[in-house]
Each structure stands twice: as structure tokens, then as C-alpha cells.
Image (cartoon, rainbow over all chains, first blue to last red):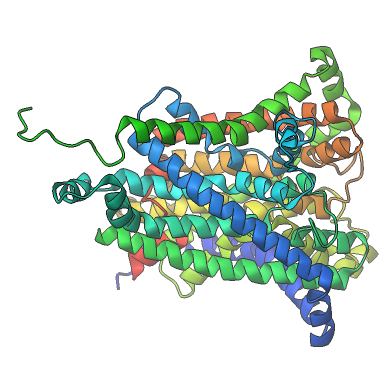
Length: 273
Length: 296
């Protein structure tokens, strides 16, 4: 190994470790410590209460549904942005980033107002009997909005780099467009697609600001897990808040591992292709 | 272009498919992304521009804007220093635990902001590790500016670092090593060799970090205590106005943050043209992945 000649390791690493310890590790450690100090029985009782379980269910199912629609819409959006030319394309490309740039609370009140019974879209949907606000459908809409850019922005560059020769070869062998898409293009996109979906699902599981305005927050029906932790705090029930927050923290760690694995795999795959 | 059998159009490039897909994307994009943006401004100006100006000028709203700007002025520079230091340490040196450090830096990105807020409560709150000691020393961290700044720093900790690390990893160490071997000091090397190469990516990270700090809701809503006119940041003030049934006021305040979001997007696009952001690195590259690929 070469001898290090660059200066600055003690200073830069010192700042980094101090910052990471104080800002990231200390609070997470304190949370885990608090949750662990509950004792297994008490901990289990809190995290397996029927209200907590209902919150996991509505959070996970809404995140799943939002991610599923995100898959279809995100793939179509990436495809349209890469493959076609049409007026307004650049505006749409720029707007894809809006959900990341717009604060979640702003997104929350805007979506609620849009889908309310007297809102622009809510009134139209109400006339066909669909209610969005204060239902799981509303939670799904909010999660879809905040996680939309993930799928588009992971698939888009891969689609741009796709070698046209592969499609041309398939065409010359007589494949129809549908077959070529399913058998040639989609498999090449799959690693990136999976990485984008896992990012999008993870974001949806933890989303708070956008969801709480539109969800109605009725216990056991439209109450997400993050909100339940928040409510326990406001009730000064700190043990319960710690336990429920630790469940979310654990889920985030699992999703982080999955996402990192999928991204590394997608990148290796791209390097080979 | 005398190609013998005419080349078939690319897959999916028949007019029927093309326009169906464009219509699908434009339809749902307009309803779910553009319409919420329009709602904000329509509602904000629903009672006219005079009413809008009055709402913005209310002392509580002005204080919320002030607090949000103040938080960003403290949290963003600190995060920038951290991001530069982390990128320098991780990309210019090899040391034990480098990959683990990268993963720890990325953690806040995947954690629910509410969890971050709750975690801070167990450090500085009365039930927390340092709470009793802080109380006897009469130092207020939670439900005050320091808590808001700390929570904002947590949620945005990866923002600058994750823009710089893939770029500095790709640029390598040769230039810096040449500069120091010619006798330049470490600072001079950084300022005259490294900084010009990373300035756009750095600015990109700072812009995104700033947008997130100013818009942060979940983490801050746990630690701020939401004291009207004292610890309410702009996003929290929007919630308060909204729950007071002051819809126009809430959207007037929200429109300020929506303008910030639009400015952020424009800045982002301008910086991407200069090679920052996704334009400047391989697709998908989270910093962790970038390092893994280089070293394994």
C-alpha cells in the first residue's frame, strides 16, 4: 500500500466522528437504550397491542399500494421522458423533483385540499362515490406523492444507457414490441427498478408530514405507526413512544440493508451489461 | 440513408403507444403533482393579494419565518463543514471501518423523521440521558432553538456528504498528492485544488440540505414543543393555522415554502447542467455503493 502523503486525516476524521457520534449515534443509542430498558414482556405488550398492529397494517399496506402504483407510473414516466419528444417534456422532467423539494407539510395540506369533498378532485370523485381524504386511499395518495421521484430517477439513467442494438437484434429476430419489452428491456431494467421500489417503499413507511393531514388519523383504521409514536409522546407515555419508535427504527435498518444490497446489485449488473 | 429493408421504429415508438403513454403520464402527473402545486397558490390568494400580504405580516407568521431562516443559517453551514470533512476523510484515506462510517452517515436518510425527534427526546428531554443534568444547569435544549437545530441537522446529515463522496471518489487523489508534494499546505491544497473541482456538487448538496432544513416537519414537530410565536417554525406554523381553520393563512405561509421549492428545483437544474447531482455520477450511486464498487 502507498504511503499516505495527504494531510488532514486527523482533523477531517475527527470532525466526522464527533458529528456522527453527537448528531446520529447518540440519539439513536438513547432511543434503543430506552426501548431496551422496558423489559421484554412490557416491550412486547406495547408493540403487539391491537392499536399498534392496526397501525403497522395500514402503514405497510398503504406503502405497498403506493409503491405498486409508483412502479407503473414511475416506469411509464421514465419511459416517456427517455424515449419520446413532445412539448412540455422538460417541464414534466423538472416537476418530477417537486415531491422532494416541497416540504411534506405543504404537500399534506395541498393534497388534502385537492381531494377534500369540496376540492377540485375530491368533488369529482365524490360524485362517483369515492372518498379519498380520511381514508387509507388518502394515505396512499400522500405516500405516492412523496415517493414518486425514487422510481423515476433510478430507472431513467438506466433506460438512457440501454444499448439500442439489443432491441434491434430482438426486432430482427421477429419479436413483437410487447415480447421485446417483456423479455429484453424489462429484465435489463429490473435491478434498477427494484432499487427504486425499495427506496420508495422505505420512504413511504416513514412518511409523516404529508400523511397526517390527509389521513384523518382514526385509531385502528387510518392511524399510521409514526403518528402513533407521536401520540404516545403527547400523552407523556414515553415507554410506549420509545417502543413503537424502535419498531420503525428497526424497519428502517432492514430497509436500508435491502436497499443497499439492491443498489449494489443493480450497479454491478450495469457494469457488466 | 439507403437502408435496405426500412428499419423498424424503436420498440414502443408507434404513434398509438406513444400517445397513450404520454397521455397517461400527463394525466396523472397533472392531477397528482401539478394540481397540488396550483392549489397552494390558488388558496393562498383566494381572498386577494391584500389579505395574503396581511397574513404574511402577522407577528406569529413573521416569527415563524425568522425562526426557519435562523435554523437554516445555523444548521446548513454546520452540515456543510461536516459533509466536506466526511468526504475528505472517506475519499482521500483508507482506514478501518470506512464503509461502516458511510452506512452510519446514510442512516438518517432512511429513518422516519418522527423517530429522529423521539430519539432526541431521550437524550435531552427530562426522561432522557442528559435531561436532569441539563435542567439543574438551566440549559434549555428541547422546546427551544438548539433542539430544532439539532433535529434538523440529524435529518439532513447525509445531504452534503452524499453529493461529494461519489464525486471525490471518482476524482481520486492524484491532484491533491501532486499539490502537497510540491509543498502546498493541506488548506491551500483543499482551497485551490479540491474545492474548484467540487464546487458545483457542493453547492448542489447545500441547496438540497437548505430546502430540507427549511421544510422539515416531523422531527422538528416532536422537539420544538410548538409554542406559538416562539418555537414554531414555518412548517409547524402552517399546521397550526390549518388546524385553526385558517385555510387561507395556512396556504399563504405554505406558498412561501412552495416558492422555495420551485427555486430549489431551478437551482438544481442549473447545477445539474454544470455536472452536479445525478449528471455527475453513475446512475444509482449512493455513496456507500460507490465506495463498495471502488474497493471491492
